Length: 288
Figure 1 (cartoon, helix red, strand yellow):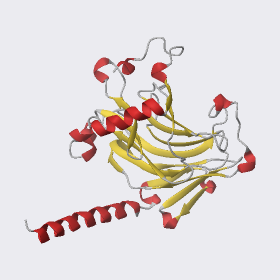
Figure 2 (tube, rainbow, N blue to C red):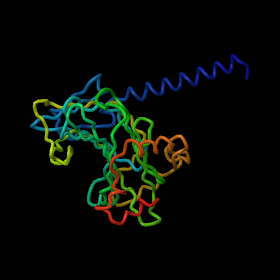
Figure 3 (cartoon, rainbow, N blue to C red):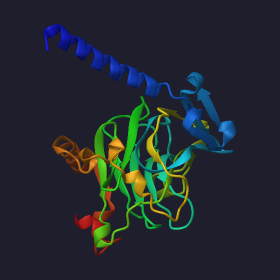
């Protein structure tokens, strides 16, 4: 391949990536999502390419995906409520319906102005949760948009902040640990959590700062549509035809591992696996 051919191929690849990124950012909210509650507290912006949820004394608000999914690499871009957000919970999560549900949670727990916001993650499998981990972020999530992602395949679940893995939950069904396997819907919401969210519920919402607002972008979805049948395992969604099921996504690579360990060492301040008063005997998944 000559130099001119190489340069032409390089330009082609670059343009392809730019076009692909532009196409993703161009997806409008109502193509994949709908408002689930608090309709009068939801504002569509930028011709449907951005959504604002708000909360006041009368109501919060939320939205959900039109489809349920059996695997995927899910994301939303979010800019959290600024100023004093104590008692406010902003959530982005996957959840199944019915009893003994599966759920994968990002929950942002607000705080007084100037104090750090907590990011809490949780994993439910077959109705069993209580797997909270809490970190403080290394940036101000109210100042700009950041991308929050959940990888879910048959090998692992990984929570990401931008491109940094902050939590890994491996599939350990072979030793009796439940693993999410039911079709799940993507949901996001802004709601009143003052009974528990900030300082264990001691710090309440300051309503003089209402309405509280959170902004969302990035409504394209990389997921395997699976319907909402809660009684069948969606094996086809584990197929290698979906890129997030390829071997590359079965475990963290070395660079990701380094970033992950840095988060655990420097930003995590609560891990259920280390809570001996709560779990005198660590849950099985904590030993791996």
